[in-house]
Amino acid sequence: MATSNALDKKSLAVLVPIKDFRRAKNRLSDRLGAAEREALARTMAHRVLASATGLSVHVICDNDEVADWAKSEGTEVIWVEQQGLNPAITEAMDHVTGHFAHVIIAHADLPHAKSLDGIASPQTVSIVPDRHGQGTNVLSLPTGTSFKFHYGDGSLYRHMNEAIRQKLDLKVLQIPALQWDVDTPEDLDGLVETSDTDLLK
Image (cartoon, rainbow, N blue to C red; front, side):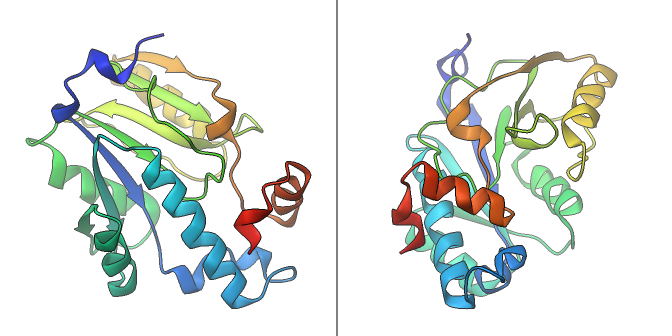
């Protein structure tokens, strides 16, 4: 497997979109109070940023509190005006194109994230799907293309088709630590089953 060492680390940016922590994980509201959901979102986001140690990390946001938090974590901030995940990431890509040759886009709700090594490969779209084989938890691709983002239900297959349309190499990577995200009460139960209860404190 190619690693991020195949690319000069100075040419590689990590983008992590993060929305207002206070509005995060509303689908867990039957199980967790507002303060608990906010704490969970912050802890997971911290783990994702830590997994990109040694790389140029940029938090995509439109919220002052998130921007301040990101700066306290030692990351750059890309402030976006566009609403919705796909437009926001597209806007952020415009910011990094010309400065970086390649990006890794990682969701902020990956509680088991440890490392983003082994994902980025030159002229390749690499995708780490969710554990259900439907979504896109981590997406890596070169900058300077007309790649269209298709986050949402079934995004894995739409991103695969987009890579083919762009005539780029394609890799789908099974990396268990990056395939578990937290959106539903069932996902929350999985954290308890794996004894990762530090997230829930």
